[in-house]
Picture 1: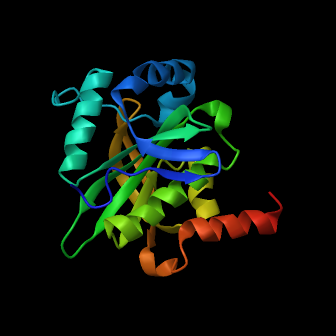
Picture 2: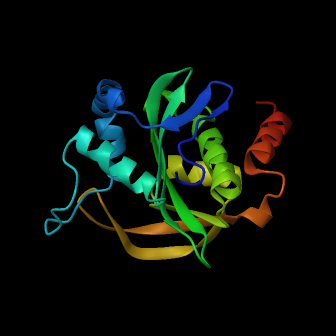
Length: 202
């Protein structure tokens, strides 16, 4: 069994749990409704890379295999039990690095309501505690204002630009890198986010 996996995390109506085969219908529905909204930020695959899953089932099988090997935490994002997106901790490295990155997407209907910052805070805390990581990073296209608001709300540090970092929407795209280390949030990122929302009155 991998440290910290499988896991179920909950904060009010916002939940994170392992991605399941039976999420297929809900996953396809959300992806279809949000196709134009998600497309500019979606990872794509260069033509010379054939080693990619082409079906939902293949994606889940690969995610499960990577989770068993301790390289990934593939979460389904839920709101009041309804599937609304994904939060994935990937690139998990052990040894002297103890690091990983978080990627995420959400149904546009739920965007801007504090759902994703809550989910990312839960996932980050889980990585720093149960998984035992030291550092989490998030890489975002600088044009993606909605995603940038998530890291800004949570206080991730801007570390610089990575040129032509990921293949997104059909080409190699520059990304802004944000990071947070465990010792920067000794009381937990979720607790800090809760307090911030209370102070802001929302």
